[in-house]
Length: 202
Image (cartoon, rainbow, N blue to C red):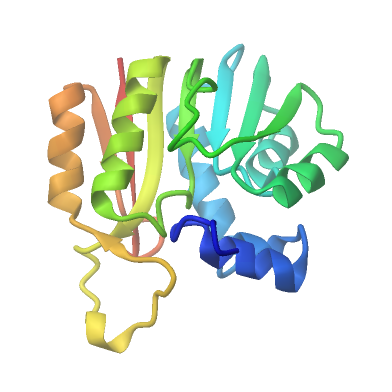
């Protein structure tokens, strides 16, 4: 793990402990994960669309799309940790493929109608997250959707333990979004203000 970037170390440690399972994705609960996923499918029509799921973990978003009978054309799940993509591939999800790549250094997969980040940005520093969102927006043909922990949550930061995740400056993230497009959707109502989602359309 000595050569593992800091933003991947929490996941690599979890993989060593839990293997390629839900627990290794560091989601607090499947319910919270699905609430974030549901915002994406309520706000975006993925019918006949190609999708790249960045930081796909074990393929839970792909599975959720299929469970919701979403008729997407194809989904490529990308994760920097091979044990994650191996588990995802073994699920044999229709119209889905999974590949191992660290998108900080390899953005060849950033070529689709929609590029998504769900939970993926949580262990990054803010500048790194913004860099990825900008690159994804450049690579997509329809739009980018991402979620993050909002610093406008109304919670006392001294009374919560988010590690290894961190909160981002929500107003800054909105400003970056509006720099890219006026067609921006924002919400943070789905988890009592804890989490925020931004969708950027071309």
